Figure 1 (tube, one colour):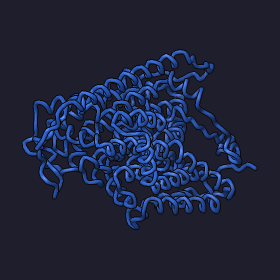
Figure 2: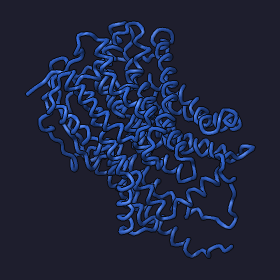
Figure 3: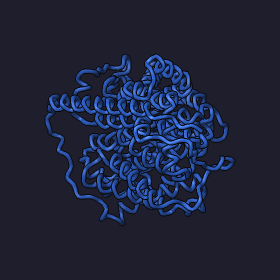
Figure 4: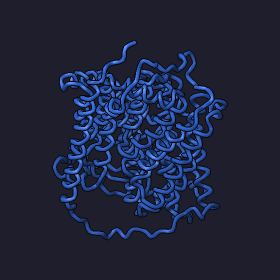
Length: 589
């Protein structure tokens, strides 16, 4: 049995759009006004989307159920797999007591909450986005800030907002790679166009974040540090995206801004240390001191995580891991059962890359970290069980959100909304980022939004005489500001920030900021299309005739061997430092 997608079920596009918007508007209503719990809102929205898909769009009930199951399964793997491992790794550092040393270390750099937010939410989060993506940066940084004593709502909220600037280049540039594959525009010009848009946002984002945390006046007090953080990040993001490609901007910019800000803070300090209301003033316990070895040991889970994640992002290693640990299958009853609006069957394959998945990389880091932080694997197993219990509702939320997204996409509801935006003519460049924003809100992924809409962006731009790279890049850039309000992202941040059941508060915290940034990017894209044409890179389209080449796994095995040697070296060094520290007499009060 096959069924063809319908874009205009009422033969009246206005009426069709109004009906298509119902499940999306319900999410906003449920979280902002009704203040429903995240998993409840997403479950009801999924049921509502299924009713519209079957009763209005004519999608067979069986296909709708299979589509929801497909989405829920994707929510469990790789999304929940990654989130569980990220929180598990953090919980290990807390259980071992090493996070107390991390807190002390961060406090020794600065006890100012504004600067801690910049270092962790903005710079370290961007670095993690470049290596892992798919929710891991928000999960890890929000948990770290809460552990440092941040208000959970502010911790999760600012981590979501800070995650905007790096999302386009996340997971070693996967969103732009997908946009290139779908649109036919080479990766580099898309990377360059995005790299001439987002750095403008990146310069302003640190001040914006600090203003959210402490207010405009308090943000002005640390403007030198804000400038160092924003300018260093934006410059490195621009340089790497324009001259090196889409794989490393987040890694380079995130790491570079950390180094620049930490170096600057050695020579400059704010006049007053800012803390949250009703929070005790920062004090330095002079009875406590930690050796360099103890600090390195405390950070060792994240050092190991960084090395493994970067390695997992290298294509030769990815090829080896996929050759040994990946299988895919045609989703039963759904594969090729839905015909697109062009009449072509839509393949529904489920890929289980259980070795190359980012969650597996984090699990490996956790397994290596357990003895490094002084725990046994028995205790590690207990921490893992506690993590699963902690995340039981977020897991349900993420699975139901992905079920919701898949029904919207497979039924044609998403295409109805896209068709209206594409019909705006010469104003389409203004609405091009809105399309990316909508795609990320629905799917929770800039990569998925680019897969959905990049071809539409390309074709519409050509029809109105605008360079397609402008609108394809706008899909990428607009998508990044939709990430902070995606129900999937909200669920992840709520889990990491101990806000389970309070997702509506987090959504209301971030939604206005998402709209502000979207409007800014929309006006900038409109200007790039018609006024600032000098910003558009010169490029040639892909010919699409390259033959598929089987990967050479030799280099991948070599890289894995080097990785193993590096990890063994790190492990031996940290254990040796830990042994020396035990011989140091303990300080007494």
